[in-house]
Amino acid sequence: MEVKRLEEGLKKIKAKDLMSRFAITIKENETITNLAHLMMRFKISGVPVMDKNGEIYGIVTATDLFNLMKNIIVSMNGQTNLQNHFDMKVNALMTKDVVTITEETSLYEIMKIMCERNIHTLPVMVVSKKEIVGVIGRRDIINALYVGTKSI
Image (cartoon, rainbow, N blue to C red; front, side):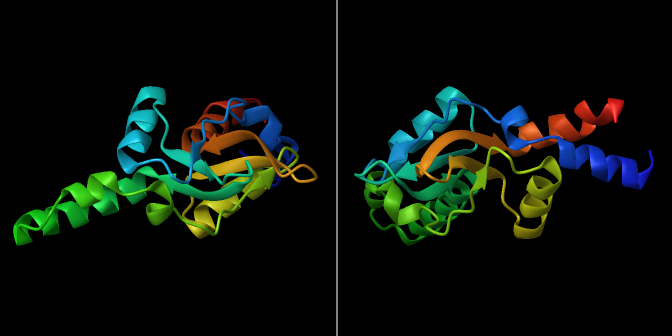
């Protein structure tokens, strides 16, 4: 496949063409246990965190939960109280510096953001309203690149 043609094709595909339109979110004061249940129930790897005003406040991913699991193992070895890990609130674990995109962000730009910043979940926003209208995850990108670009 010609590089220039691929790049042009990737720039034509927009976030609105790929995103999951039903964004699963969680409130900042929910527990990590509730977050894990939500992620397993909907088979998702990242969840935007909303503040009390309904605006995006952070994001929590499966990577964050795995890192917490490392702390649990350390605590088990030190025989400290494990309940603190399970009662922890989402806002204590989340990443506050959330990278977001708009519906018009191209697949090319999304791929660059994900690869350069090692991000696997991107909330899609309507900037004027500060509203989440969807989410794009790495599965969406893999599908678009390896399945969807055959016609480019």
